[in-house]
Length: 126
Image (cartoon, rainbow, N blue to C red; front, side, top):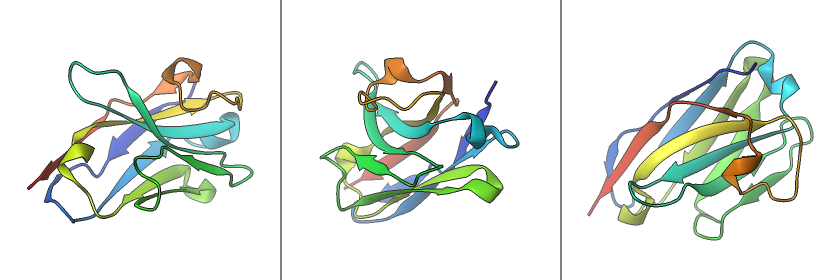
């Protein structure tokens, strides 16, 4: 079982930056082949934002965030970060951390992840 706790959500103005953290239970990242950040706006489907393979360092991004967001893992602290720069109102959403036991090509789809955190809210104003 992997427990995930997100933090770092806040309200910022457009153009600002935030860093989200996803803390996993002790040594849980070793049990996860991939860790991802998803976001969801009420009434819409959950959208994959960024994925990392903590053991190998591979990273993947949605087109909408490429060049602005960076995902990174600190394996020693069992924590995955999402650095978000140049935020726009379209980035407003609840952000969730997810972990998958197996690395798959459909890594941006929520159905392939086994464990989820409770989410942290990001609000970007004009």
